[in-house]
Picture 1: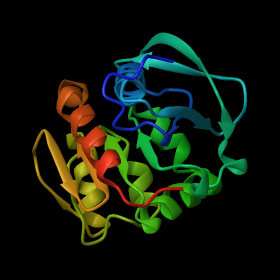
Picture 2: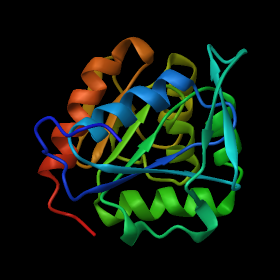
Picture 3: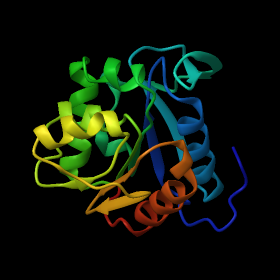
Picture 4: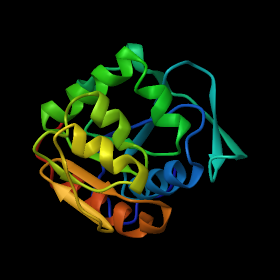
Amino acid sequence: MSTAQSGRLTGRTIAILATDGVEEVELVEPRRAVENEGATVRLVSLESGEIQAMKKDVYAAGKHPVDQVVAEASVDDYDGLILPGGTTNPDHLRQDEKAVAFVRDFVTSGRPVGVICHGPWTLVEADVVRDRTLTSYPSVRTDIRNAGGTVVDKEVVIDKNLVSSRNPDDLPAFCSAIIDVFAESETSK
């Protein structure tokens, strides 16, 4: 774990929900950012073991150890949630009832959620984008609109407890925004 720089997130536990096919940079950079602010981060996934991250969806990248299986995870154990993208990662997550329920419960609890790139597919499946404004990778935008959400094309969008960004190019703004929203959140475990 990194040494906390300012400690804005000291004492907070953040979940990253991901599985095989996650875009590695969207997993690693937000994790590093919140750890650098003192947060404890746990990788939650569909199965125990390791997940295979990818680069640009087609090139195998690193493997990352899973800390907890989503079927055993409780929203009450976490102060924030990060949903990275990659195309196959959220596609697998949205087909798993426990993962979808975890995401739904997280959003409806009011706890902060950071989501990037294709990650909103899981939000759409959880039916939590209705009447919300967010951004995403272009190919996900029709799904968000069809689920009752409003899409804008911005680097980062904050709508109540949802922080969203479009793609890896937005990671600096995304990481800064999730730190701010996670730090300001009064909803904690």
